[in-house]
Image (cartoon, rainbow, N blue to C red; front, side, top):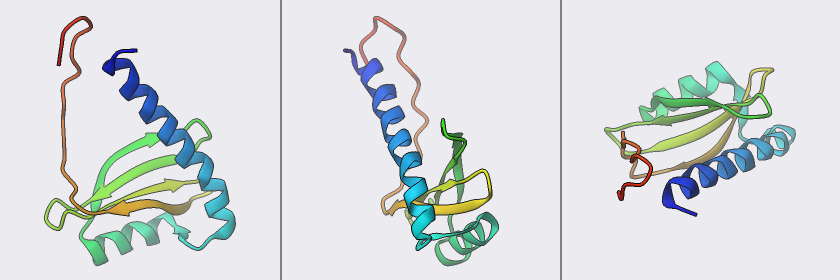
Length: 107
């Protein structure tokens, strides 16, 4: 398996795992709130704004929030009903925009 095949497969597995964990997180509701409340809290407390967004296979909206100024980041998952749960967070955020290598070329 090439690196170009491994990375998408790994990202898909990670997002599927995170989205699957959303149901358990929503049930516990310890780190969940309405979407607007979470977005406002991330902005006010950490200076984070949405950097990327994607749709999980179970209908959950996955978002990455980050602050280039402070380096903090947060991954959230939002159910179709609008409940947003914090899935992961950390420091040392760095924005990347890597170009995918053409098949058959070394990166």
